Amino acid sequence: MRMQLNSALRSVLLGMLAGLALPLASAVARDGGSGLNIPPKPLIGQQNVATADLLVSHPPTRPCIVTLFQSDTFNVYAPLPFTYSPPVDCRGPWAKVVFVAHFNENAGVQFDRTAYVFLGNTALYFGTTPEPTSSVGPVWTVERNVTEYSALLAQPQSGAATIFNIVNSTYTGVIHGSGYLYFYPVGRGEDGADAHGRGRAAIPSAVYPLNSGNQPSYLYTPTQPLAQQITFPTNMTHIYLQITAQSQIGDEFWYTCVPDQYALELQSCGNSGYRQVVVQVDGRTVAYAPVSPWIYSGGIDPFLWQPTPGVQTLNFTPYRVDLTPLAAELDNGRPHTVAVSVYNDGDYFSVAANLLVYQDERVGALSGAVTQIDVPPLAPNVTANLVSGSGGSISGSVTVSSALRTRLAGYLELPEGLRRTSVEQDVQFANQQTYTINTSVYDQQIALTSAVRTVTEVSGAGSEVRRRVSTWRFPLTVNYDQVQQANGDYAITTSVRQHFSTRTGPAWDSAAGRALSDRVRAIDTLEFDSGFNFLGHSGMSGSQRYEFERRGDGVSECYLRTIVNSANAVSAVLDGEHCDLLGGARRR
Image 1: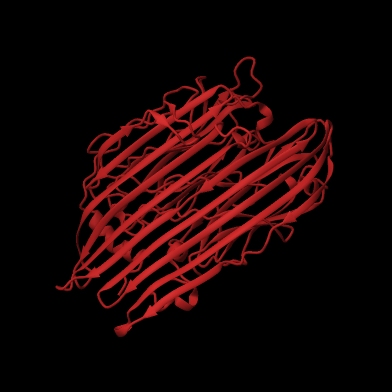
Image 2: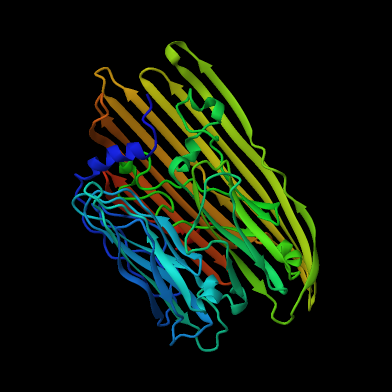
């Protein structure tokens, strides 16, 4: 019988983690420069959190630091509220604003926990925590560039830091944390330019959160949306929707699920292995957004994620949808309802979303029209090739796939002339699960591909046609092999491969733009006796390969680092000298 990928398995494994002794992680350092902020190298033999993720760059000027919360103790199932006021000595506009949070957890036993920090109902940070051990607790830092929230940060706001944590005689891990905003003033002669040279016009004029109560919304069914009615300014030129959709509880391992009619015989969850975010305006679907297949540090086998967690596990990256072609319709001064839901949502998703709005301050109102909304409905294809055998055995595959093309188009009458904007999405998804199930074997192989290609075209208003192409990919491969041996003991071997990648740049210059690639691989074997009492684990190995490249406007930046792990400790750290994400390798 399959050992389910759920909280029951996690409870079994928490005790085994209690015997691990982990040294404290080294402190996170910044280079203080305006270019790439390369993290310190993990130490060979380090068993605490070790990632290759690039840090947020900080300008060389001295910041004003505002404390949001300090040395807070997260040991209850409740948010910890705080109040915020803009820095007195650093009035905006700001060149850059960075959210920085430091966390640590005492030695003990604890699940991974969802963590988020909201300010003015907007998520400054959203992620999860690593799991502790009985000897030493993890220490980690998260950072996020929140310059685009400058309009929100210009006003006093209420906020809350939340890590819902249960502490009792069994689960003893208590989390402590401090959070800050670093405000970097505009340098002399600058006009609100940030560290990458963008002017004040690149900073949104307003932020409209869809959430309330300084927390995510919990969506339990596909028909339950996160929605907000908003009366927008009448001079908007650009509109973007940021979305973070985190799978929880029964949906945490959504990519392992199958259509309902096959769930019982495959010993799996239902609703199929397909999830998609649906964006609606005034009840009409206008766009889709992918659901990232994140795996948290207790996911499937906790040993897989020590010392390196999965892709974005500690710090989720929100997905951005361009709704600019709808500006003319939303500029009409009437209230509009913007809603986000999750297709095939079962139980459940935590969702945070907010709109970033840009205005043309030269005029009080803009006119125009929406000329096209071509968004086909979701209708995934399901193919099953299953063969039943003697003794209840079954083998074969179940595949769910979807291919969608969407297009939004519209125009605005700006002071300099008519500007047309179109946004085309190519949304691709496929999840093939292959099974071998009999009295002694439960083998499940998952091959998931999820990709979005967005082409934005702008023309008119006295300029040439400009096309920008953005790609988002997040494939996942999981091989889960549970075997009952001749003596009745069980061996469960899990291997995971995650590869998140993005690329954005002008269509007319394939060598310009920015690109990121983050690959995490891990394998481990858990051993249990016939009563599923934990005996040990073996064969743990893993790696992370993180690469970032940016070229254009006289800038050439490259960062490449690989961390190799063996037996739950760092065994090698390799820094590369060449990046090739944009084509034509460039030296670091």
